[in-house]
Amino acid sequence: MKWQNRPSISEYHPYKEEYEQLLDLNRDELLFEIKTHIDDYFEAKSKKEQEGKLNLNEFFKLNWHENSIETFYWKFINKNTKIKDE
Image 1 (cartoon, rainbow, N blue to C red):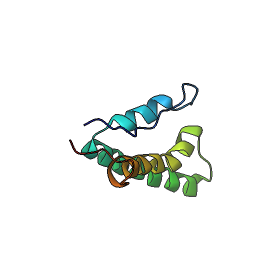
Image 2: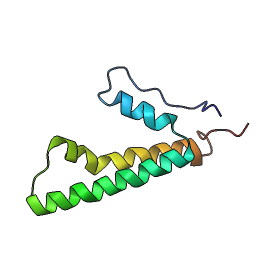
Image 3: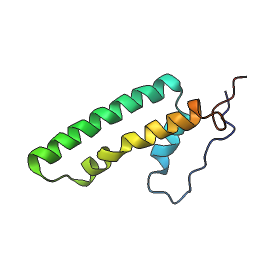
Image 4: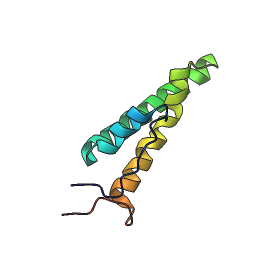
């Protein structure tokens, strides 16, 4: 199925490749990514609580789950933007 309302990511966006990958996933793959990102979130949160500091990669893990959840919403739930059944 083609996603007619697929957002376009700027060529200059620092995480263009990661966003493009999220946008290309099917429903099951995206649900798996959401689970993985939430697991990463709790791992990074626990490390922050234990050590009081995070490296840059861990910092982004704290927020990346929001991107995958938002992608799922726009691609499969929102009636105005979701993939239309063919």
